[in-house]
Length: 277
Image 1: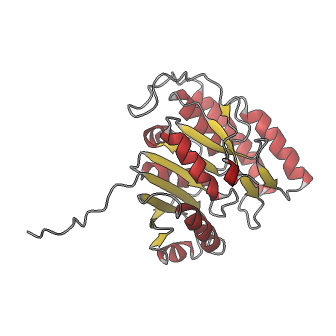
Image 2 (image 1 turned 90 degrees about the vertical axis):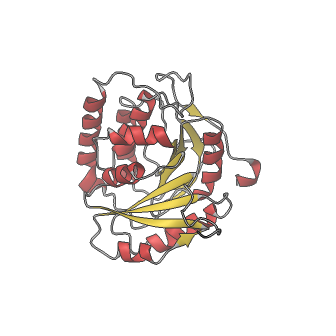
Image 3 (image 1 turned 60 degrees about the vertical axis):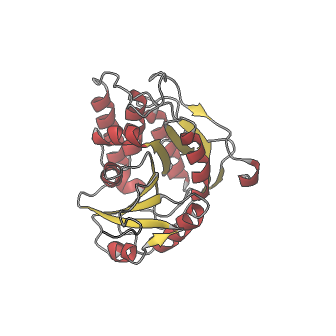
């Protein structure tokens, strides 16, 4: 028997899910940006890119990356289309104590992962990047129609998960057991899945904390106000209906004890001085 080091890979302490549908063009830049952010974290991070029923070369692109910023990259195929389905598959494939997800275009600067991790390690269960945060820096080139639609959507989301200023920012990090328990019950598979995911985390006793992000409008978004608005509002109705009869669930054993499931989310001014513009 050899006395050398074991070849068994260590369990990661943080796993980051990146849903990607037909992201062959934007994914290389997104992974490079994520890798730069991960380089400042301790070893033991893993990236899980979920190929969401892509019809282009997304999977081929991912296979070129063995690691980014010292973090191994794993490819997971999800044959069911929809961002919610991809994130759900990714979260359920994790085992780490902390997990999160970022959009493939990294529209929300992944440098904020450092802040999210710090908050998770102090016992918070859900950390949400928020473009509505007063300290966020937002480069928004959306049309007036899309902005109006987003305002209506935010008003409706308040019926499902009250108090969260921005449910749709593609930057969310969680206590691992809480995220996996919430993801296992998800019914919404499209763009509105974030709302149901957050609401289910609240049912599990989480108290979401919103943090500032640097966000830019990246061209090539797969969301279309004309093609997806109606379905997104329909998904909100599905989420609302699925959540209504659910009794308050038990907080996972590793989660922070004593949190009131009905507690309102917290808006936190958490960017350290060196990370603020």
